[in-house]
Length: 156
Image 1 (cartoon, rainbow, N blue to C red):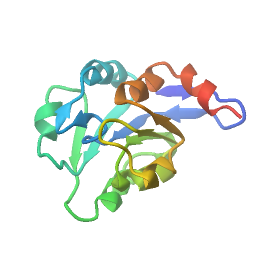
Image 2: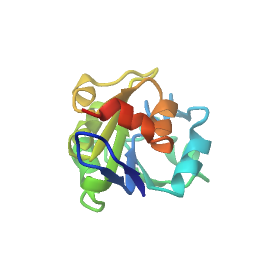
Image 3: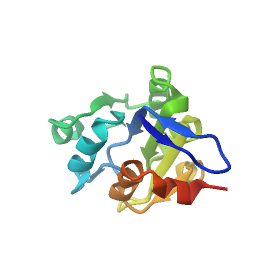
Image 4: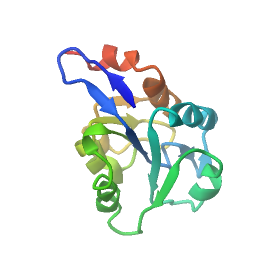
């Protein structure tokens, strides 16, 4: 559990992370440098789920050995399918991290949402629904590893 007291808004209690793969954790289907160690560091504090359409077909291979549960989404209706994962976790204790248009529902419903505007860009529909935007997945994961950074960004 990650607990964050933010002045001017209710405290966050995060038990689950739903994270997109392509464009977020990976570039061109390959895990971005530094992601693995950060996921290992977070795994002791929060349940990690990767929710992906797996555009490149490499998600399971790239994530093998990492402390994450991988959920492959169907080719059609990915936004709805990703949001369906929230039915099995507590949306009020979930952080969503993504960059794609199919992440916008997660961004809207999760207790905390982080858009990653990395090398593959970020869909404006998701960016506009995010609480925070980061230039890299490393920065996004570091916000969870060092939560006081979120306080500075989100306080009123």
